[in-house]
Image 1 (cartoon, rainbow, N blue to C red):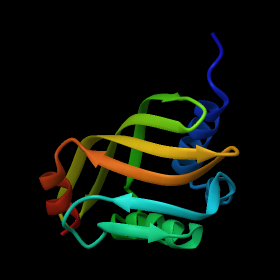
Image 2: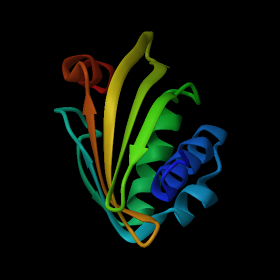
Image 3: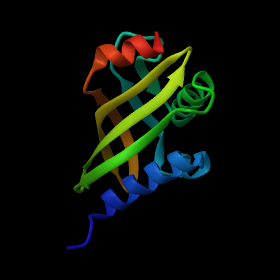
Length: 130
């Protein structure tokens, strides 16, 4: 059975992110995307607009001296949602991070319009980002 087109687009976004290809990532986001980051750290909050989200991604890479990465385990999608299961990792200020998460996106017309990240161990994430 063929993968749903939204799953293919979501997977393309993860591949582009991992390759540092933010132009492709940008092309997969709606201009007015809303990106929700749960937790109680300085990266937590709601980011509105593609530029704001890409600045957040840049912050992740900058604060980890380029060690921030994601390891995608699986993606499923339908006409309106995509769900990714992945592990994020990085190093910062002598700390190492490795935690699984679920990433849910709302899709419309082939673009991600809203995103939610749910960490398996939110306290570990909060401690890492401070």
